[in-house]
Image (cartoon, rainbow, N blue to C red):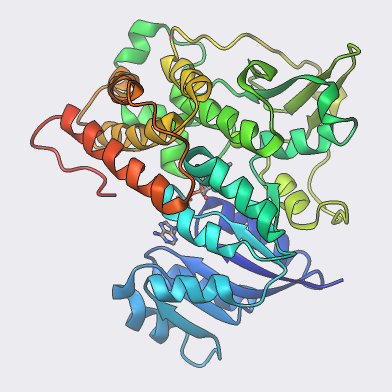
Length: 393
Ligand code: NAD
Ligand code: MG
């Protein structure tokens, strides 16, 4: 059965993998709309390739370029926030939400409609405003399907039993480029070295988060909201091969694991169609050829961002929102060469501790989340070198 699909963040890493899945299954999807950030040409090319009905660019300055690039295609277009909102309002059975960062919150939230499936890649929606999102999804009757590989694997593993029988849900981490480096060597690492991910090919911010293990910390928070599991029932294990993505330890001692080759097209296809699995002609996992799968504990001493994220999850309230905002600012400063690797965790820790006494409740709305996000960004910027102007919110 053909489903209509809208892709938010269509020109990014997840968006491009989604386009590959759609192009391999032309009969399974009809593309309603595609949304991009700034690159009008790339968005127009994606819209043409996918035969989308509508293309929206977030940056309104790209309006003319987008229109010119779509001339003669019959594809409607618009630019600016209103156009992005028009894209999410258009009829679609599924919305794949893959805008990066907190910019994804508003459109992803607005995309929740009765009976609609949200294939959710934008983890920030859950990290910054998890309670608001999960409550809205329940009230509206929208379904949230995780695209993130670990959560997608967990979603499949959890289907083997009842939530009350889960002892621990475990997500794996590749360990990032510094898995085997000493703390001293990591301290001197350059942005280039941090961005070189050993397994996955992704957007640059998430690469740095993989090097600090903050990505895994954010994913614990994401898992908490998606599956309703508290911090003490969530775990992380480092698994450099990235073949096992998520594991459920049941209370009877049995374990159910989700395995796949590390290719985001696998969880994307699963999130888009869920129980109506698509035929994917990707290479198959050959366990005998791989021969060995290895696991090791996550080292919170060399990767203090993981500990900071765990602490934020335990503290609850708006601490995960604060953590995420401080991290975005610190990562941008690191990528700009303004601070060193361990200044990322130091910035995050100081901002979190400066908010901790206030015990702010979990944001009830996206607007509340964005307000706390803005405040935490300002606090983070004040800790960074004066002359530096990084990552405007
Ligand atoms: P990316 O930077 O490659 O792509 C981001 C996309 O969002 C681009 O299309 C960009 O044009 C668009 N965008 C940026 N700002 C926008 C704005 N203000 N309005 C509208 N569109 C905007 O990022 P990515 O790696 O594809 O990641 C996207 C999301 O998926 C992130 O939240 C990330 O954490 C999550 N995720 C990514 C991966 C991965 O393998 N890349 C895995 C799991 C989860
Ligand atoms: Mg992941």
